[in-house]
Length: 145
Image (cartoon, rainbow, N blue to C red; front, side, top):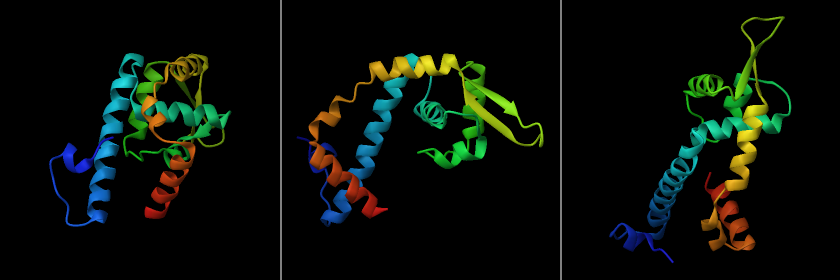
């Protein structure tokens, strides 16, 4: 089992600071893992998040709704969607009543890509946690926020 003190060769003034550094270190580790995982699929973790939001919506939704639901509320969400359009994974639909409003939907190609990713997801590191530990971790993270 890892120990943040040993992993980064550091001591901490108290356990709260140690926990904070551990959260940041682990978040960065997961981010790096995700980047490597999604690279062969030609998308980023943020683009994957957009595709999942669209699949879950089951109907075209406004750009702002997507931005509000994103895990990583990046200001570049529009650019991310531009790239997904270029890759022909999503489609833009202009509102007939108000041309300023744009709806986004996932298409069949995007759904197929998500299905492929779903069958290839390798999150073995989550097996290090029991269901009870995962529940406790989520509760503690919610409490922290």
